[in-house]
Image (cartoon, rainbow, N blue to C red; front, top):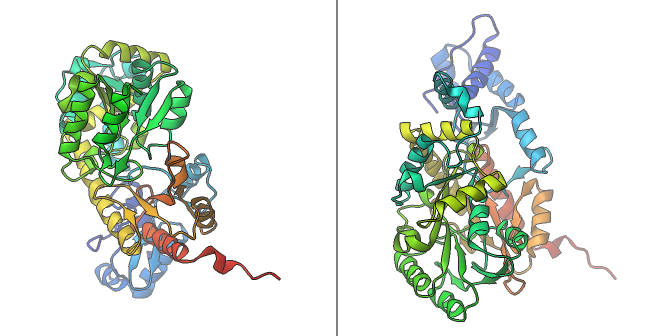
Length: 463
């Protein structure tokens, strides 16, 4: 951000005015967390002040929590809302000063100005207050129209009256499970999967049967083996940037899965929330078996998690049943979020935000891989987390405790397994939510030191 020149208040000391300008431009989106400020000498020349004044200004900004600096790397901006960040830490069960790398979330790419502009445009509409009423069971027609545009980006062609709107992908998944399954039956699932899927299956009285997988994801041979035995009729799969391994199914494997599902009359639940982050992924499985696939995507990973807006493309004839389940579970999105998200889709803001998130994730992935070089790491382009296999001297739970003591929260591989026989000596570290690249760098530097340090080195021989 070497071209930044602040507008300074004339009635304050220069160093205070510069620090105030940093705070103001962060708040209004002119600057963002992770930006690098101009070198002190360069900014001093541009503003016609001494280098000492710039040094004091940067020190003042750092004191307020807006800036971090390191010799040789420059001064980088931090999250401008420390109270908000602290509140988020408390809400996530974290203590102050802990960097949470457990949440699978994107970097914040929606600025204050974008939100204010969007809300202002909504409130200029004559009947905007209707957004606070109960929406129709299917949601407003204009929101479903916007949903078809976002689904089209995912490769899904569907009519607006067939789309189901949901308050996030998890609510959509709950509606799919309640529609497509019955208590007591089995469901085929990845051996390592989205952790919330397991308590959901218990809630619905479902028994999970893990499929075999490799570096590309679940194997067709394993799916056919279980299908032929009649062990289950429903399959849950994350085909793109799978959580937690980041594996992406190839075109051939997607086609094979669809063909097996058709041959054995299986129902597919395709959770594709990471799709638009990946580099040119193959078409969705639904395109090869639309008559039996529930397809889920959302804006949470690609625009802003707080919108709580997801889109579901169900098999023909299932829309009404899903809308009914959405009403039962309270899974419909609120009108204001749906309106804001829909407007961003239609005016191109969501796509621009997605591009910024993708660029930031690629930069952060490079930082992660730089510090994890030499280790077994799964982190394909577009991923917002790294799946790190630990050396044999570390147990995942012990490593997680050591990382927490160092100020970092990561997730042990054990929470992703679907049965006890699936052993994973690994951790997942999410680099999306961190306020800046600099904090990502610091975190992976610490994690690498821990990984390389055998825990028994801290023990003393006892007689």
